[in-house]
Image 1 (cartoon, rainbow, N blue to C red):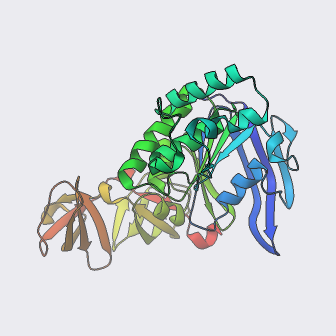
Image 2 (cartoon, rainbow, N blue to C red; image 1 turned 180 degrees about the vertical axis):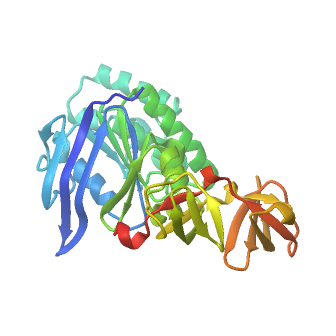
Length: 351
């Protein structure tokens, strides 16, 4: 169970580089023992946020609180955090054992304690017996484990991870996602993770922070971010979506794609312009005679666990995921249940 104690608080944090504002009044708290992911496209400000918490950048304005104390101008080595970078920055002239032990030796930890701690870390990252190996002889995944062990051996309260899986191939990346989450749960420390990969965020996180253009657009657990995106950008960035312009006829009734649909949303007013999001897996293929919409299948792709079909209804083209394949060119009916229609204010109003 994630504790409610706020370990880190960012309050009205902004950052400028050469007159360009890359963070715009960020407010974010991170709880003890939480796995938080900063998610967004390149240039959205997520790495800058991480570097401010790690002490590698200072905010232009705002406070960075750690356990209630402002650490905005505290140097990195005095903070109770450690960072794992995408480029692991291992020391090529040291073996695995000495890379992991490096920080402990700087702190003049007794040799017996160093050996005990390094051995424990090698066990934790599944590298027992690799202590004498040269780091250049390791695979990318093994090097990444060494970098994590080197950070964790110093017993930080927070581990900052800046796209640490970016250099790994797809299969290894998926394995390491599960390993990192398991490691975080076993250690019971706070992880702050930066990525542009929405699958990584959904797989590992307790909380996802979606960022764009130096702002936080939405904060929530993976399910709520996926099921209830705050706007069209979040809906499009987290998973695949059909995003359409619509009109909220009245509470619990919306018009889009040339048809009126019952929905569960309310409070948007009458005849109000809205954005409508429907996930591809939430559109049901039915017979033409019983479909709310009718369309022609323009393309079919096999995606392994489902078929992806593009279906032209005449007014819109919808992406549909189904485990049942219908041939290209066939006519089908489409149904969407009220709960699977998500209504949002148009992006222009959100801005």
